Length: 308
Image (cartoon, rainbow, N blue to C red; front, top):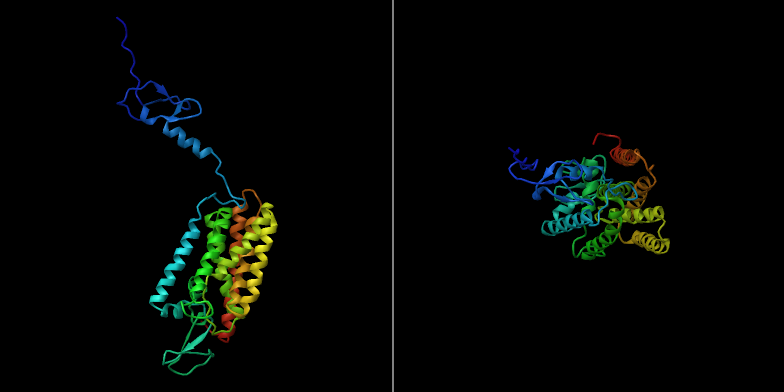
């Protein structure tokens, strides 16, 4: 009597008869589990294991390669949403713009800051512990009919953010791009804190935009790109920095430019080995500490060394 033939079934679906083996682990797989390979078919488990061993493509600074500037889209959306909110409720600007120190009187008006002030007056700004202004001011803009530019303020900044972001973000990767942008905004605000009048209110994404401009220049040099167009762009950026001295908060522009350039340099020239991410994170942390100490020192000077 002849033995009955052995029925082979899929290792993932035991109820399904099959006759094809995975070319990698040699287990039987059914049509639903077959994944086309360079030779034959592989099972889902082997495909997943093989994907882990494939080295992911990285940017020149070690970030994950991305073709869609998602963070740039998000930053633009956040700025636009903040602008709509401040148009609906203008008091948002008073509360969250970058202001070092000023007094608000019983009548709701703003007055020059002084260490000792009459009863009924209250300090506001960074000296009053409103440290969030160092970042939130970078997401607010002039009202449509306010100042020299009005509505053009946000339009110009968002256009520049879009133009730079879609170039710089793919070169850095999303995480490093966001870190650089936020540090540039913070650096711009700290520069305003140091160099502008204590009661001067500053708003705008220009600090972050100038930081991206500096990063664009640094990264172009790092990859050996044609510097002709890059140099022309930087000349226009620096020219605008000079012109803005009489029109907008040039301190924020300068602070963002310097901070963005330093962060980009740390990213670009970190050692290209296992220490790269650690060195880059350490450089950003060190710069954050410098900015924090600078801000604290300035606030201490404004308050006469008193507690904030």
